Amino acid sequence: MKHFTLLCITLFCATSIAFGQNGDTLKCGYDHSITWSQVATPSALMATGTVISFVPSLHDKIDFGLHSWMQPQSHQRFEIENYLQYVPISSVVLLKACGLETRHNWRDIVCLGAGSAIFCVAISSGLKYAYQAERPYSGVFNSFPSGHTMTAFFGAEMLRRELGEEYPGIAIAGYAVATGVGLFRMYNNRHWASDVLAGAGLGILSTSLMYWLAPYLRF
Image (cartoon, rainbow, N blue to C red; front, top):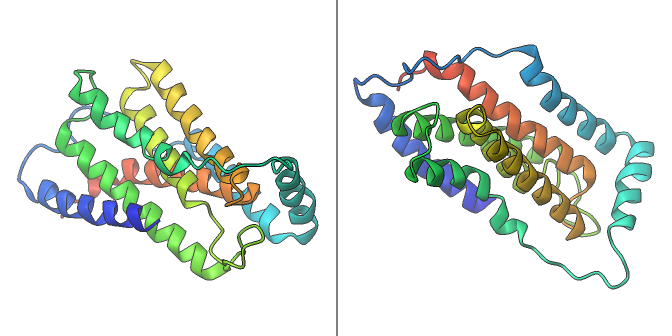
């Protein structure tokens, strides 16, 4: 989480510079409106994760049940998700640099990515502090929501918005990677299923919120 926070600070500086220019940012014809269909799924993910986490009977049945199923006796951690979480958002930059056409120009992508990341960090940090949920059998109380999963889905949603219409396979791949990050967080005994669901929803919602607010923001 500390690495993601550092990334957000760096992006915030870039955002301030970018929006501070008297340029033509966010005027490329992209529809920034937000619809119910765009928020229904991530909202449901967050709501489901919250209910499972804080209703004891569901937490015992679902979180502990899935945790036991994903922890075989010969279990060995394979924490590749520490790197995979950044693949979707990095792909936006790399694919644009390779010449693929995105919905926005470089300046806008930096601004949108920075804003989405800041929303993610602010909301997730508040939730972690407020709820103090314990990680699986660790005695550490910052489990809800999953920051790795949130990072991955924030990037996957941005990848979908920038390249998904022209290259749907790329959008699917981004979401597949993000889903893998969530599964690895559970497999590696770092998070409950409810943490992962909430993290996924939060990542998508943060990006959607930034895309909606972007035309009205000027720093």
